[in-house]
Length: 427
Image (cartoon, rainbow, N blue to C red; front, side, top):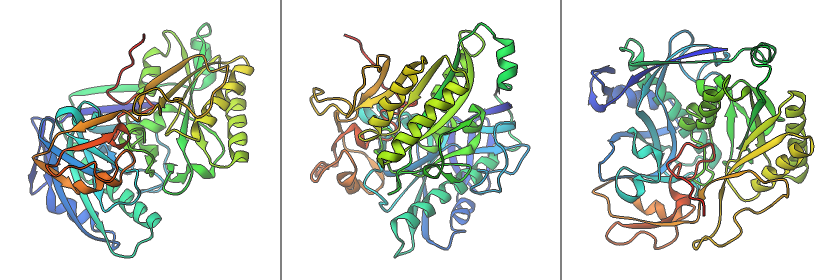
């Protein structure tokens, strides 16, 4: 597969009467964007606002973040979701790099999150550095939670496609090419390099904890091999409300940091042979089946090494170490990427499960770390909702508008695919 991504660097975003970008300034047709979102008759109203890096602005409760793009040589959108199915990973895409659609609105589940554009909070979320077009959605009354989530999810995808139209004829600032051939071709090219696969565990538990591949709910599949280009080309979207700190937003799927890091080493230190989605289920039978199946796929692919990233924490920790144990027993070297739930003082057991084979583990941070967020000059959304987020509590919002929460509540703070600002200090 060969994917060409053309980047148009966005330096500012302003409101206007038509979509366009010139000299790095993205103009957003506010009324057109509203009408696009309101195409769904289950949406009562929508408001559009901007949040820019350095603004003393707080966005809450955040549901998803999506990067606006324009697909040059196929239907524009998300195949299998907003357009008919087409294979992702080949062709040309123009990207408004630096801009993001952020969806907010009435609470769907308690595990939505907060983005601060300045101060202490900004240091913990990667989305303090993006120019955020905030889409505040109010659905009609009476929707059940799953319908509510679907309405908001699709509205965000439509909004990103609408804004992405500005990239259609824009001047290109930078072009990146991602190309990996068939396994036979790559092994022939790099016969002496170790073959490395990437297992991406995904929350797939129902109860608003789901991700989607070409529109297919990942809890409905067995572990599946896919080309890395597909994920960074709109094949994967987030529909989950897992703890905000480590939920993988659609934007993060579009820019999966582990995929980019593995690509950077392909043909140099490793032979990157592709990705495997391994759904995280809640049943014991489901866990055994998926972990066994994942190890079998890696073995059949001839992997010498595997990187495994988790999404979420708690019972998925068991899936993580079960996969590790099975891979190591097959002679496949395994590295794990996970966050920790170590308590406010950092001394609690970080994972709910362990395995002797798990000797190479990268931590993306402690989800329970408590941070204090100073009052904002502007709140987009509902500040009081911070009290009902995972990581918040009744009374965590003070009268002056300051907020005390765990990292749990901050979007992308401990992302286990590496798309975050945290670093690890070794002692």
